[in-house]
Image (cartoon, rainbow, N blue to C red; front, top):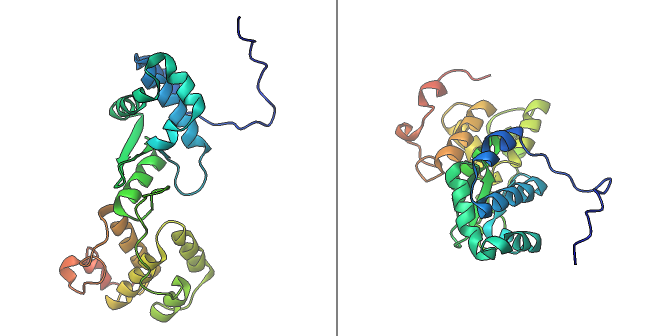
Length: 228
């Protein structure tokens, strides 16, 4: 018995946006059916995510019934890991192996590449059970209070910058960066933000965080200037 024709899209239903390059550069080059289906579904699943981290775990994709049905003609769910690996090798997706054995996938876009670095550095915790925990809190004091104690008067612009940073970095990092700026006589948010960006790129360890040796300070040359 033939299946009934599709009844049409529902007004107001969930919609996702896909880049035009996908249709003119990527999809025409994919010959493997499992890779094609896994790629499209992964992009759909990632697009539905909200919040700071737009990514999906391989285990989450394996648990999706629509994807399982779609993969049935080309090896089923057992073919998913290989299909995702081929999508990552092609450059469509970015793969981030996790400590719990799962893999987190991002879209290979500017935002995806940035978030991949943040997860790898520990600035952003991977979602789900077994995700890498955020660094332990080193101070119960809020960053705004520490700014006033260590740097100076909290202006509206700095308050907004601190709020934005709190959504991007662990608050313990922000507090430590502010204290590091004061310690190195570079009392400004610009300096503290530069420290946070370096920790995000390279990871945070004892030398780059609490150490007082200027050999570990990538901003030592500029710390002596007056920062606005």
